[in-house]
Every structure is written in C-alpha cells, then in structure tokens.
Image 1 (cartoon, one colour):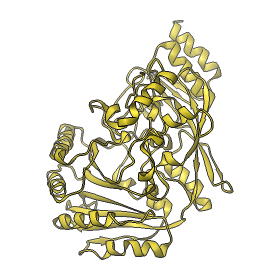
Image 2 (tube, helix red, strand yellow):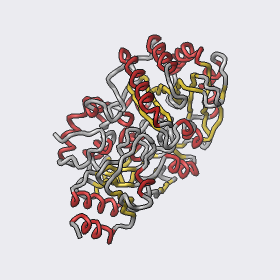
Image 3 (cartoon, rainbow, N blue to C red):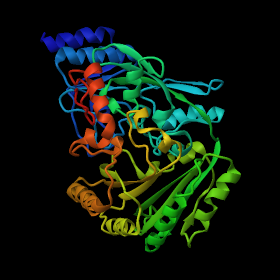
Image 4 (spheres, helix red, strand yellow):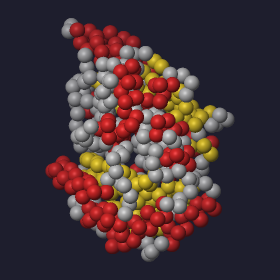
Length: 453
C-alpha cells in the first residue's frame, strides 16, 4: 500500500462523511459547482458531516501534501470552491440550523444555503442580511461581505455575524467573536477563506416579515436612459429600510426584447413600503409592475431564476465613481451589444447601515455610498464561451472611465491582477500580518489570496 493510500485508509476509519476519488460514482456530481464554466477535477473530495470530519480532511491534506479548496454552497462565480488535483473539503452536507427566537440569534453550519436559513428563521418572523440569490451559501457570502436586501437597514451579512467556529490551517478548532480570538474575528469578516474553514456561523436576527414590500417594475430599453436617471435620483433619498437594484437585461418572456428593470425590497411596514415605492411604480409607462406585498423568503429568491445552476458564467464587477449621464449611456450601449439573452448588467446601490461602518472596523472596506455594477455574462452553449467572455470584458472596458477603485471580493474574477490589493485596500497590511499569524504557510490559498507578511 502506498503512503497516500495508507493515509486515506487511516482517515477513513474515523471519517463519517465520504472520501471520493474520481472512480466513485458520486464524484462528478460532488465536484460540480454553480458555474458550469468551471470544470476542475480534485484528486480527492472530502464530503464532511461535522467539524471532526473537517479537521480530519485538513490533516489528511497536510499528510498528502495536497492543496485544498473549500466548498460551502459552491456559488462563487470564479469557481474557487473546487481545485484541480488537490483535495476539495466539501461542507455541503453540513446543514444544521438552530434558531433561538428569544435571543434573536441563529447558528448554522457551513453548508447551509440562504434559502434554507430563511425558511427556518421566517417561522419566527426573523431574518438577517442574506444573499440576493437564495441558492448562495451562507459561509462564502458572509466571509467575503454579504450583499442582501436588508443591508441598508442591518448592514452586510458579516455585520450581523456574532461568532464563527473555525478550523485553522493546523487543524485547531477556534471560536472567533467580539470577545474571543478578536483578531481572527476581525479578519474573517471580509477576509474570505484566507484564515480557516467556517464550520458554523452565528448571526443576529431582526424582526422582518413574513410579509414585506418588494418586487420589480420593467420598462422597455428605449426608456432606459430616463429610467436609470430616475433610479439614480431616487436612490439618493431612500430610507434605510429600502434597497433598489437596476438591471439591463433581456425579457424572460421569450420575446428577446431588451428591457430595464428596477427591483426593490423594503423591510419596514407595508404602509411605509407602499409609500417609498409609490414613485417607482408611478414613473413612466412600465411594461410590468410587480411591486407590492411579498413574503420575505420570496423577495430573497426573486432573482434565482436569472442565475440557473449549471449555466456558464463570466463576471466583471466594480463600483462607479458615480452614476452620471455618460456612465448611463455607456451601460445602455453595452447591453445593446450583449449576445446572450441570459446575460445582464446589474447596478446595486449601497447606502444606509452597511455604509456607515468605519472602514477599519472589519476586514471588508466597502463602507461607501454608491453604485456597484455587475456585468453578469451567462450562456449555456459551450461554443459561445469566447463570445460570452469577450462581451463581459469589452463592456467592462467601456466603463473604465467611470470606475472607482473599490471592488467586492465575492465578485472578483479569477484573472484579476492584484486581487487582494484591489479588494482590501487600506486593510490589506493588517490582513497580511494576521495571515502570517494564523496561516503562515498559506495553506488556504484557493481564494482572493492574502499572502503572509
């Protein structure tokens, strides 16, 4: 028996999950992630059932000399959850969720998706900031920041994180919180997967729903210039309870007509939500108006159909200096050139509680008010890959005169230059020092990597 086979055999004796090789029938399904463009083949997949399995997987990777990737929900568009030739530590079987409705907290394991968390917390009319696509995993989204409908009122997902149980690069299990391992707690709130594996996360919950105000208003692309100017101006006076996202896309009704849509969510009273979105509903001559009372869980999954699992994706995203008229015209020009009806350009507005946190308070530096543009290129025919990637890059190049330096780490493509510097800005020196302390050998590097100091 080889040394590697012997090591795997020893680990198998205690491992309660599955250790899969390319010969196993379940291997291909386990290695697939949300983005169908990603086709990596790990040498070994450790599908974990608990914390001890994660520790075993880390120790096995060290013994075998394998590089590792960590999968939670597998939604990262750059495909960082899976690795060629190494060991993928798969947390997706870890689905435990416990809601403490009296304390208004929830603890969930690292394989939980936002749709699953919302289902449990909404039983009590409670929620925390979660992804705008509900099939996203809680761990990856939170560790990188956490954009969601509730962020203007309650901050990013990481601002609601009370504690996390982490498996470190040496296999130790540590709890990170505001009063325990505080440096680690600072680093994981924005530092992504650089500092360990989050096997469980504890969040603050807030009284939200079950009914909120939300939905979408759709206009023809010919009205896009005026609609986006209205969107820009309306965002300037939104209360913390409300969030608006604009989208330039192809109508999903099969007409192949390009449209501009305004999607919104309001977590306050239904009466207040109706008042806030009244001007959105009245503006212009919409083709469709679907803003009204909606279950919070439905609001959080409203965009899911636009991002089907297995579609081929290539994204570019960055903040704008401002959403001026010239930038608006450029965005419209870009969508007019879009080759795939599945592709879209999203404009996310940041304001409120998420923007008022000091930049140095967490590792995530995106504490600004403004507009984040996401060029989400999607297609299903592999023969269209070059065309899909080229459109995203060309659209991004058109926007270059209007781009700020700020970029959201969870949206960063895999080929971006100096990703850590772009994503972390003034917080990078402290992050490098902490990386040297918690992961001096850079064991966790399949991410927007922070090199040790």
